[in-house]
Image (cartoon, rainbow, N blue to C red; front, side, top):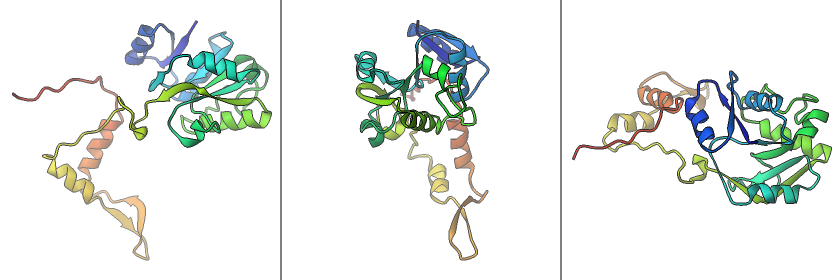
Length: 219
């Protein structure tokens, strides 16, 4: 069986995984680490695959991973995104053998735990890969491609934010964003709360996940 984990009430993710043929577990956990650990505790399959919902599986990805992996307990796949992943030094999406988690734990937290829940999302993969390398159970399957459709990589259909050239107020505020200056008049990494409605609007827009709608302009 293929299982996926989604936050309870996230009907968009639940429906998408169900349509793809997966059995979906719903949890109150919000973070990536919490969802992974929940999935481990409530399933029995021999392998766990850590991924998000912004990937594209290339043909034979699983076959290639298992062929290359051999006796490894943690098998990194190729997301085609960053140099360290493409070169086999790291992985953002990986297969983890259940017996390894049972025996030692995939993080530094001990047996029966996959991810350290002190992380929300970032650094989860770093700890898992580092621990596996030190224990001698890591390998990379560069021919196993699970493409990361991340906006930073410029891959379609990655989400984009388009700003009309008619929104002059937005353009002006972004270009004139104010930063505090230190005693030596150097700009600090602290914004000033002034004329920042454009930034606030954009922040609120990007921190929600509405269902996409098609905009049809006036004829």
